[in-house]
Amino acid sequence: MAPWDPKRSPAESARSARGATSCPSSGLLARFRRVRRWMLFALPPLAFLAPMDAPAEYADVVINNNSEREGVRPVIYPHWFHRIRFRCKVCHSELGFEMKAGGNNITMLGLMDGKHCGMCHNGDVAWSLENCNRCHSGLPGLKTGIRGGHQSTGPGEY
Amino acid sequence: MTVNKGRIFAALAAMAIFSGALATVMSEKGEAHAAPATKQDAAPAAAPAAVNTFNRLLKGAGERNLPPTEDGIHDPANPGTALLQTPRDAFSTLSKSTGAMGNGVNWVEALKNNQINPRYDRLNPAEEAVVFDLDIVREVKGSMPNVVYPHDRHTMWLDCSNCHPDIFIPQKGANQISMAQIVMGEKCGVCHGKVAFPVGECRRCHSQNKDASGAPAAKAKK
Image (cartoon, rainbow over all chains, first blue to last red; front, side, top):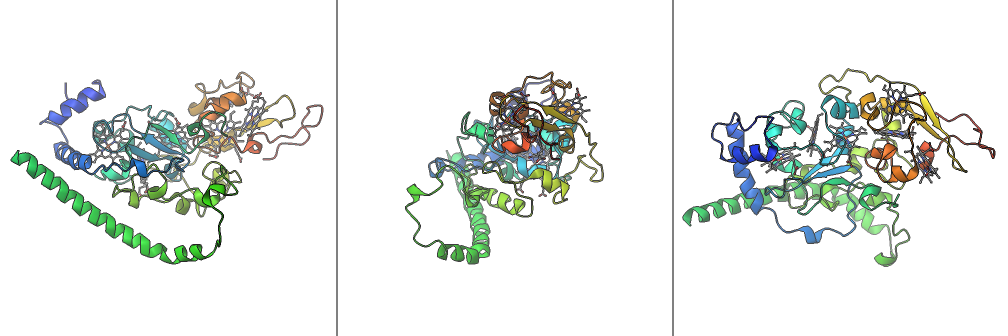
């Protein structure tokens, strides 16, 4: 089975992609592998500097299902930023994003194949995937979920 | 062993280059904001001790919409963080909402007044939204004004399939809705309190006043 086969589990395809030599986008993948390495070094343990009641922006989505485990910073998706440019219908109907933080099984291989964020972050609609640290911009230790609403402070806080 | 040393050296070199780049970006930003910063320092004289601020839990307008480098979730040491847009800048030209929670933007007004023009199609900026005009009034027991659910202000943004049938059965009165569910992130709370205006802005949903008998007192304001 090819590493980009949609029927494979994401973990499986990511695993084989790391050792793959015959990948369609091996140039970018090689870079992807190299960059990962220094990102690991460049993760300073700055979490203690974060204020306790973090005033995170309303509708910033943290996606950290695999990122930190795989040695990169958690993804922070600025939902408010994107709704200035697109209506909900584009992403949640046309492009098929589930309305659930962390509920879309996003992987880098998928993005390179033009899925999820890769439907726009392809150097055509928006800047391309080489800009790792614009997406992987979160502090270490963040949990997947939406920030800044009453849901993040517990039920009843509205 | 030598391979490892080489790698570590390369990593350190990369870090040095990137921190250099970061420092340049930061110093540019610093210069740009230097003037207003000194003005702010001069204005509030003799502030009381920070622990006893007047509003402790209510966030002031100033503390909202902070730049990513200060918002407590972005990593300030990440070179990409400084490139991201500060919400305050993005929202500066948009209509404001009165609520103390949320991002302080009235997205309905912002869209109506053409302050933003979000695409309805990924590629075609000219495609128009299919707006469906149907208000659903939900009578609320007790003194709370009735809820008016407006289809028009939702379908300007959303597709029917975003709500029907997963969140709501498309039939008046077929859905049980309570405030408890909304606060827990169900029904209207799937969006309100997460990405759309927050639950604290009661009056935007509970917009139809009623008299003592419970009958609508005035027509719902549009």
